[in-house]
Image (cartoon, rainbow, N blue to C red):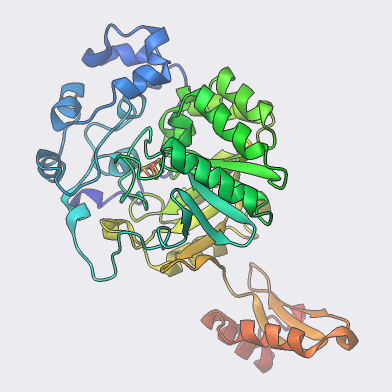
Length: 435
Ligand code: SF4
C-alpha cells in the first residue's frame, strides 16, 4: 500500500467541513444511490446505522468506493482478519478515490494485516494474564479495566484488542458480570473503574444504566470512566437518553477516541457539544499511526480541534505490538518529536501525554523530551522549549540522598541535543545570556 501513500503527509493535514456540504448530514447523504430513500429519522438513528453497516467488498463498491487491488484482495478473503464493519455515516465521508484518506486506512482491511513479525503478540499488554475474573483487568493499584462488550460501531484496523473484538464475548455473560462486581466490592482499594471493550456504548441505555448502577452502588468506587469511539465513528449514538444515564451516575468521565481531524464532522461536534453541555468531562485518546497522524502538523491540528470542542487531549499511544499492526507502527522517537513540537509551542491543554503501553503488561510508560540538563543539589539546569538554558535554585538544605539519586537517574539518559547545548554553554558561546 505504500505507493498509495506517497503524498499523504502533505494532504489530509487539515480538512474543511460544514453542515451544508458534509456528505454524512441528512439530506446530503441522499445523493448516494444506496441512501436515496433513507429518511432523516433512520439516518440519525444509531441502531439503523449499525444495522446498515458495510461489511463486504460488494457493499463498499455499491456505495461507489473505488477500491485498490490490495483492499480488494483483503476483502476477497477475510480469513484471519478482523471483521470489517463501517457505519454508513463514516463510509460516506471517506474519499472514494483516495486510499490514503485516513478514514479509509482506519476502516478498510489490507493484506498488510496478515504480515507476521517476531515481536507480534495476540495480547501484548498481558490483559488476559491480569484478568482477576473474566472481563476484569486489575493491573494498577487503585483502578480496574472492565471489559463489558466486544461489539464496536466500527472495527478499527489498528485495534489493539483485535483478539477479542467482533467475536463472541468470552466474558460478557451475567455470571461473569456478577463476579466482576463482587471482585470490585471485595477490593476496597479500587476507587476508579474504566469501562471499555469493545465499546460499551453499543449496549442499550437500559444495560448501561444497569452496569453503572451496580458499579456506583459500591461505596469505595469514586468515579467511572468509559472509553468509547462512538463520538467519532457513530456520533448519533450520543442521545439525550444516554446523557441522562451518565448524569444519573455522575461522575462519569468519557474518554473519546479521535485519531485524525478528518473524523471531526458536524455530527461529531454536535455529539461532543451535547456531552460537554451536560457536564461530562471529556478526554481524547489517539493512537500514533504511520500515514495517519505521525507528524506534528496533523497532531497539532487535531489537538486544537479537540480543545475547540471542549475535549482535553489526554494520551497519544505508541501503537502496540498486537498482531496485524506492524504497518501502522512508527519509531518511538516520532511521538517524542511530536510532544517536543507541541510543548511550549501551543497551549498546555493541547499537549497530551505520549505513552508506550509496556509489552508484557507493565502498564503505561510516559515518554517526553529531556529538559533536565544538569544537576547538583541546590542547582538545576534546564532547557526550555526553544533551547534556552536556565538555572533553578532549589533549597539545597532540603535535598535528600534519594532526591539526588532521582535527579541523577533522569540525567542518566538524556537528549543528545542537550550535550550540544551544554558544550555551547561551557564554551560560553551560546545561550550564556540565559544562564
Ligand atoms: S472501537 Fe476501540 S475496541 Fe473497537 S475496534 Fe476500534 S479501537 Fe478496537
